Image (cartoon, rainbow, N blue to C red; front, side, top):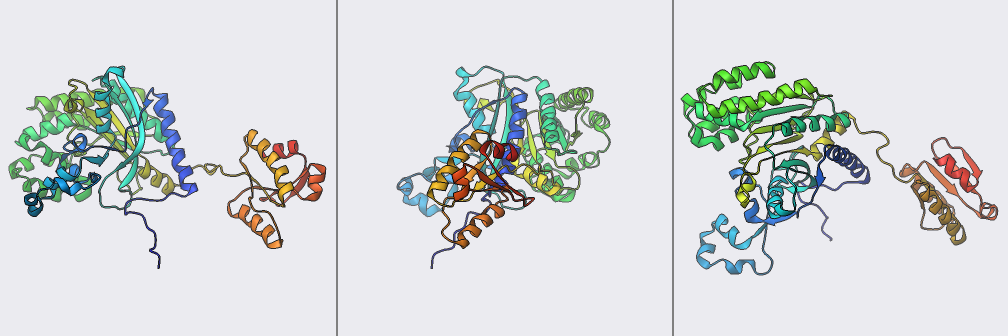
Length: 460
């Protein structure tokens, strides 16, 4: 018995309707990227392992899909190493490439590799799939698309202001009103770590803090204790867990909490600048919110950190995120090139639009008219009309198999109905003789015998 076909967990097939809806999101985001002056690039689906490893923190490294070397990949593993069964040591011998985890690190590699061909500041957008060996669940997949926009070669905070506007423009265009753009600053997190005496555990601190909305305050504290952060230091964090009020009032509270940290004060100044600019410029449908517990758990952020959540009432993780990275290209040899970027989570945005019923009804423009096939002579006559309809911008097709009995006629009509094709054209001997077409409206049930020009106008 043949094995039942399947696909890997965390991946999906997409039917024509789903692809049309995804393309609607792609085209909306792309149009706004280009409106804001971003240029498209693409990078390979897999990179050299040393390009990716060590760039996302310990947790990120575990989620990178490794690719086995071709050929006899075990030949480079000696008996002692094989017997030791240390997977980390063996992996470096049998795998030199990996599927990309995100688009930001490959972009940094691209910038360094092509630095002599780039005009800085360089504004790029990229919409491609990425892969993560995560545990699949609602809104979390092992293969998914990211839609990124980044600017490198400028440390101006006006870039952060523009990215807040870009988020707002895209979600407004998608009719996804009420999205929340959460913002924090890595310098504030560094300042907090300094104040609680945990500067040497900044990564452990931020990784734990980033889980606050997922596991709650007590679990976060337990994880911090487990990482060696003192109880006295954690006690000093309490004001952060209860910080409330609007953006401005939270900024004032932070000034008091971080009064002894020069780094923390810099972060406050940067956030204050962005908030003042956005308050003056205004947003169409999104709202900007300060979230001092936002960390995103990635090592390469050095300034602003963004994360976007869906409108209230929608149970979904983040639908976008990003931040400032002052030294990402430095790991590839290009120093002092600051960058900032954001990402749109296409797959989660899709689920949110679906849940809220925000996809336009006319999004799927498939075949508008199908010609019934009565025989070879009629089919050739119909194909001339199909060609004319297509040139007029109408999606048209001819059923490939000709009718030989009544069942075949019914089959062709049902085919059009099941695909929701609004018009059916019948050309029999009489129509062929008079160079005419019987046009049936499958919605109203009416039909007329018309010439080609009239048929085109009625379908349009």
